[in-house]
Length: 147
Image 1 (cartoon, rainbow, N blue to C red):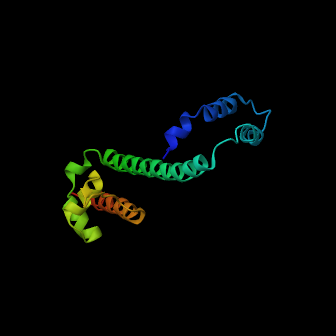
Image 2: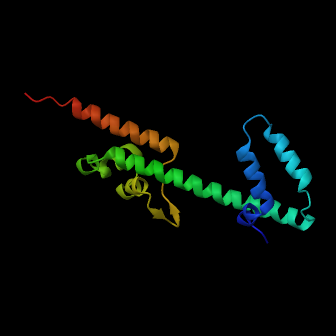
Image 3: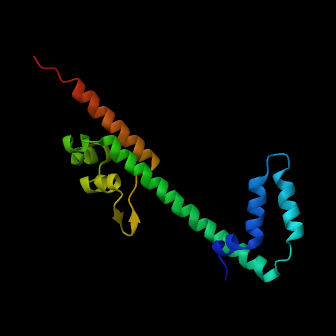
């Protein structure tokens, strides 16, 4: 069985990529690909079937890794935005008061911890809820008046 790396290493594919990279826009990309397919349509049926299923599966794997990397970057952005604030506020209070959850539930999501083999992350509504909680705490702190 072949995979996407095998496909990318094919001389035919490399020549197509080279030709596409040299295109200056005067020639339509579709024409280059059509010409390539006409000239190199000599893949066996077995190769076509092998590439078709394996490349699709490999692309799915790549997209999953990219998605996981994006989620990790989002989690890092949250931690970075929190800065030293994480040391000054009670995550136990936020977790219980705003989410009805435990402190560990919240810190697992903030840190991207593995829970039952999966990385714990906020979903979109939880992320908005967390942001609203931080803003609410900020308003409460700002409203404190000393004599």
